[in-house]
Amino acid sequence: MVGEAEHGHRLTELLRSNTDALVAAWVEAVATTLRGRTTGAELERDFRELFTSLLPVASGDGRDLSGHAYAELRSLLGDLSRSRARQNFSPSETASSVFALKRVVFELVNGQDDAELFRQVLSFSTLLDGLGLLTFEAYARAREEIIKEQSEQLLELTTPVVKLWEGVLAVPLVGTLDSARTQVVMEKLLEALVETGSEHAIIDITGVLAVDTQVAQHLLKTVVAARLMGAECTISGIRPQIAQTIVALGIEFGDIATKATLADALRHALRRDGVEVVRKGERGAL
Amino acid sequence: MTPRSDGPEELPIRADDDVVRVRQLVRTYAQQVKLSLVDQTKLVTAASELARNTLVYGGGGFARVEIITADGRTGIRASFHDEGPGIPDLSLALADGWSSGKGMGLGLSGARRLVDEFDLDSEVGRGTVVMVVKWKR
Image 1 (cartoon, rainbow over the protein chains, first blue to last red):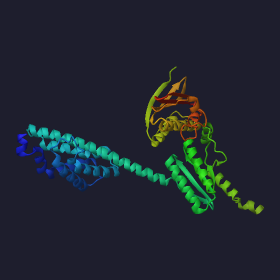
Image 2 (cartoon, rainbow over the protein chains, first blue to last red):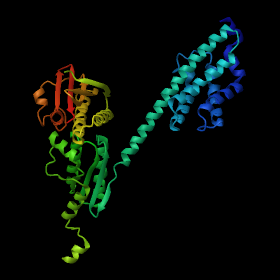
Image 3 (spheres, helix red, strand yellow):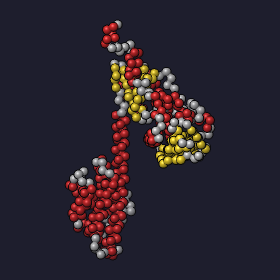
Image 4 (cartoon, each protein chain N blue to C red):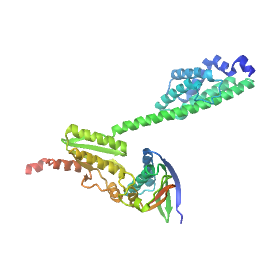
């Protein structure tokens, strides 16, 4: 277009010459919605950076946001969304940071009777829409990363091997027992058996909500592995509803010792070791 | 009398996590109609088996869970849909201890014993739909 060639991009010029005022208005618009959770100085820094990298692409229509020209913007928005996701901002709050710039720019050009400028603002607005969606995606990705990290942490957290008595280890299982967790449990238990030289292991499933064939198979494999290492394994914490379900499913635990409670299992293990727990008075009577 | 369905909910079954999600959804429904603890556990376990079958043998699919009422009774209906290879021999698949994979071979037959109604519809090359119902006692 002739006009554009002569004067450059009208909107870009306007944006550049009003940078300070625009960034200030943008910060103000967003600060009211995010009050108290982020400081004006932080917003100012983030938005100025964003604004600066927006300027070179303000004349584009943002149709190809995955292109090279938008690389810097994408990485900036990605960082912004990630930090927002970690600070527990909602996705709308994160994306509206971008959308807020629209209003600021609309107010700047408001009242100017310039059809060309109007078209440019419209296309800039489309660009901002695209960028807003990018923040949504980046936010969702960041959240997924957080969830994945947490579930990995949980995997480690929820499978402690505890020593109940000299030679007696216990693994209290809680929640869902899938292949990955069973693998962790089995490895930890077998390692602990070697380290402590224990001969008894108790797997307590009080906290397991449902025992299906896969869980049962995992349990049986763990018991067999422990046996191969010379340790006797007891499964405890089988609640009435679990017992009935196991029977209906047709799962056979064979000759594996099972007990209703962890206390029963501990008594069983101690007895096998020749340890009898008696009250003081009773011992006196002997 | 056709059962009145109440807000069916569907969940995709694409990964191990989805099996857990289906299980949780079924549990929520079972608690909502106040199934006894034993029946809740039975239904949830059956759903777990069938959802895993959908994933492992059907190559993924979806589960649909809903509350139904018929003849003054309330129950939960759960169905599991896949477009996998189908089951060539139904009576063999429903036999105890037989597995085409490396499981215990109790999933399908066990699930049938855990519920009140069991319906298996499979066509080789087209897929499988398993529907189970547990009524409130």
